[in-house]
Image (cartoon, rainbow, N blue to C red; front, top):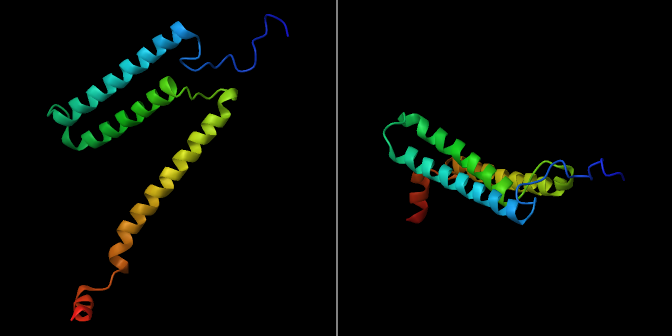
Length: 126
């Protein structure tokens, strides 16, 4: 392998993998972004400057951005070829969470449909 050809996987380096000094700097950038996003979330939730119905949407967008900051700056998950297993594990975890959330919501919304009517339930208790 010649000196001009980059090694496999070096073109996509996760923040924190550059070295100790650069790693500390990227952790500090991640910390700053996480604190900023948290502060903006609290500000949006408590202020009257933002249109009321848009607050939940803004908080969801900020939460997704917060997750992105944590994945990239602290967990070092990138889309490089050397991180394929990390991305697959993350995708599997998201799938499991979505299945649990969807199943729980489905059960909660259909619970009333599957229950016995109240008058029949009261007759059984007598």
